[in-house]
Image 1: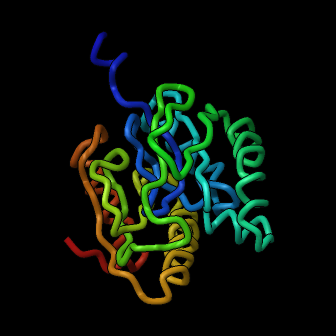
Image 2: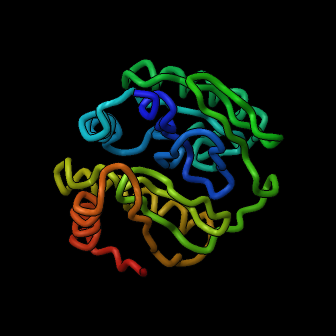
Length: 209
């Protein structure tokens, strides 16, 4: 029982390379899921496979949010993200944890703590990493992160449109084609991670070890 109480909590957060979750496990989606294609179906799949409450956190300077909020002013983006993510969390039955800033690690709600660690206004990532077995296992400032822990639980067309939208976005942000890698560790186990990897390969992603 004590192990369950103390286990890190799952949090949907931006896949930006600067998002560091100090307490919790990140399930990464561009814009923390805001306007991500198929997100409602994905949340249902996440709830099914993890069988626990899932949190959602906002971050500063989300390029995905800037694009989808149709404003060129970062101050406006940062002022709007919390209300949009709170509304998204309410819609999808998630727990809205709060706002992670460019500052020291901040403890927000629902046992989540984190911050942004890349230089403000700069992107450093040169690859994209998919998580396959239960969310982020190792933080790396050199990679954008995308959760694919759920892909074997949804129709292939949903997985394809969701992942390709995010991959295309990060490659546009980087201004170049990015290498695609993956992490397999996590509570879902090796078998589920292998199933998810097969889906990515079926979609056509060329994954590196």
